[in-house]
Figure (tube, one colour):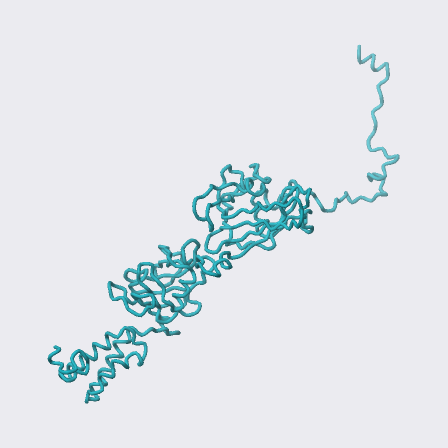
Length: 436
């Protein structure tokens, strides 16, 4: 009690004057209450009150207890061990992660990397885990931070998992990355999270291309993941770029397909036609906020449709999906794939070609939706077997029978040669007899 503590009431020094046992107990409680005992320096302010303790044995006991008590809070990142490296995630009340939140369960959470796996962890109770979880971190579009959690059945961490959910839908990618690297980040529910030590390099996925971009001065530069330039040509081999002039029948010659970061298959298509001082100048050919989707409303399309949206990054209300032929040009599925693979294809009276092959992750696989029955009149032309030569020009050598031109029966030397006996005309007597 305060009365028993004497003049130094309320301090560990006063506790000593009330008895060695009370001093020892109070020192242990003070050390245990210390929120972050990462090293000896964190314990020094509490150890100064033990100066008047005459017994070295008591001091050693306090130090030993403090080490055990702080061990549960010390961040650990050990490598090469049987159970893999471990990091501890702590929950705080303030945005500087100075005051620990002691309410509820999961105040601290251990993240143990499972050896031999790719970003797979064994978690204790806490953030995104009710009791004990085996999770695998992966990437996916339209999930806020771009990071998802795959709940796995066991520590093999194989397969797609039994359940998938966003890791931090309220975060941008840079915030999720900051959390993995030891920064103090909001948990989206009024609390804050911080790893005592950052996760090791290569132990979490790079979802920068799929996570949302954080607003700021550099947001514009990070808005798009990549871009592809579509150029039109005046010849069939894509060697002569098409030039727009005053009397051109086509007002555009080049487009820039800019892929939004953090939005699946979502593009802005900007007109990049160099027109100069041409009187045919027209700058209203941009098409923004649209994405590739799979569909085939008339059963003869190429399976890829274009769906527009009212607000950036393919959000807001949709204008509905339109067929490829109505937005671009009628093409069957094989021709469309050649275009997306950076090959030269016919586009009406012209040819078109991307400056490079589109990454397969930047457009959907719509083959199962496409018209591919040779008996069907597919838009852009019937789809035939790759080995079929129907409708193609034969460019090989035309072989002859191989006979010698000097041979009398050769097609080049038939003069004076009778190939078969001729029938003579019937006589008049024979014709009269036949008639009688």
